[in-house]
Amino acid sequence: MDVVCVQEVRWRGSGCRLFGAIGKRYKLFWMGSKAKTDGVGIFVVEKWVDSVVSVERHSDRVLVLKMVSGDCLLNVFTVYAPQTGKPVEEKESFWDDVFHLVSCIPQKEMVVFAGDMNGHAGSSNVGYNGTHGGFWLWL
Image (cartoon, rainbow, N blue to C red):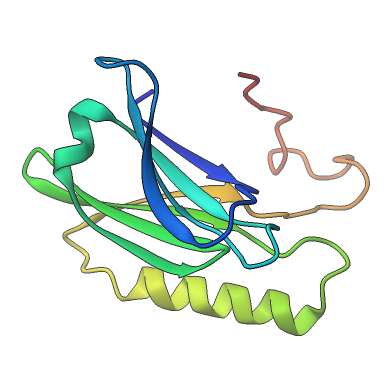
């Protein structure tokens, strides 16, 4: 994998750091919180690091990395939506902010949206055929 989005980084502050052996390294761009909770980040394989144009750290729940891919600009979002138990106002504010950020991206640029959306369709997927396919990736 060349780009990997992560949530619950649980580091304070923000920054970037290289991980791995030379020739097999990834650079992590992250945004955490003061309380070492939540946090998001994006790992980029070393061969693509020079293609990163900008990193926008909007909060400990939203980070956008812009990179050049061929002849287009790619906006990679990693998000960590407020989970069950958080106030409705916090959830609505989060999604309003995310929708605003996505709407500001020019149509000629590509968007990759990844993360933990904390979406729920109830306690089971019964009656939601085609909505929740049971697909997941175990690494």
